[in-house]
Image (cartoon, rainbow, N blue to C red):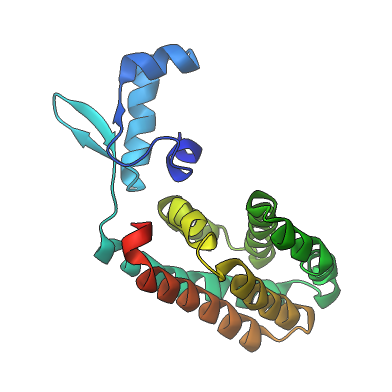
Length: 203
């Protein structure tokens, strides 16, 4: 359900029916209610008494507030991953973010590009070795994944984002935690600025 909502397979405003989901997933309606509780806590759905649940819609102010939190959390994550992992452990990602990801952009294969970004994000979270931080980032990511996908398709964003991610990786490969955090924070701020510039087309 989280994946469907974050990919906008269930867009904002979609009504979620216990009976239908219970039948689809072959689980009890009590189980579906438990799932609704978790999704509601994560800010992904809104439960309406006597009416069921609907997929939540982030308003503009909430989106930029989330980006402010992302900057702090993901910057810290990059710092911790750089400190706790051997510099050479990032070399495979440095290589992946060379010609392979360049080829994705040249082909216009943004799905392949996003898969590589997700791999970098996952490896950075794992490298930070901090379950509390990982859970906080995961929660935030649920709220912004669909927006991130929309930003990537904006004019020039994929290539700009690539250079920003390369800066993060370069710092991690050099074992420079200060530079890694600064580069990651700059990447998140840049994404927010792009969103602000094109907000009428994205939100």
